[in-house]
Image (cartoon, rainbow, N blue to C red):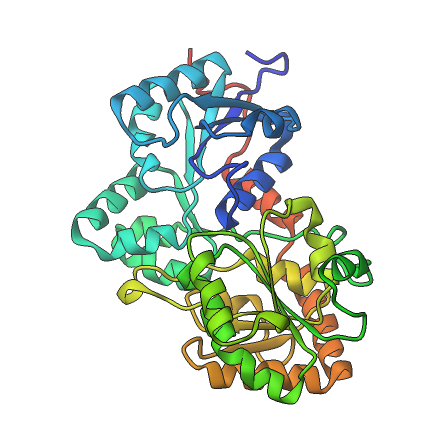
Length: 388
């Protein structure tokens, strides 16, 4: 038992660095906010030693690369809860690991919270998966949601009482780290981009849902009005080869730069190198794969960039359409190109949009608020319910 008599929070998750993505960033930020109060149980990943050494919270790595709610994992999670005196549990994503909640309660855990993301939207739509999601909703104390869109899709799969108890817990953005007036000239020089060339940035994993292919389809129309513009695609993923091929076939190589492998610490300077952020994300697989929210949109806005976002899931909730950016039809390269070109046409108006976006994000998407909300959901007690 800790000296102050209080138990710790066990965070059970597959979504944790060094793996990169929106959920991973979200869970890491919450654990950072909890500090030494958190104990993370997650999967083994290459390069994890360096990540774990830099954290204030304890991290226990399962030997497998993927955690599933198997009897073996259930025993391991309960053992970690006992060893570290964890009386509260947070699931980084409710499905499928939230199915472990019942066993943890029987082991003495007093409070369980499950985060939900776009990932749980498809669980809510498939009959068998829907039943499992309802079961998790009954076993945890509360499920959270990152956007109104996700709440509206996940809630109907739950018992009415559990749906009503859902609480919004959205990711935030560090407005001191991501801010205007940073120096992005170093990245421009590395890529051979002149200081006066307009740059449109798309930073995200390279997967079909993110819409980088639509940006490439729209780019010739942007170039017809701004022939010196550069499309900077930052990120890596399975769509990389196809995107490179599409850029080559469209003879865009001179105006499209693709950069992979940048560490997250360099991202503020990446945003600083851009004039516009655009990512026409789209919902795929008949509604099973939406964009839940989109931390990159928040980072871009905090950096003072006007944002062009695709109409998918909760992504439109990251901008004020027409004020801090534009929401576009992600299947219309013509509309995407028109909005980007209009922002490049009037840099002063685009900069004003960026300023409004930063103000709005600072007001509505704060990490301090997110961590404070989590603490209300996982209140620390004097060791009550701490596993023996």
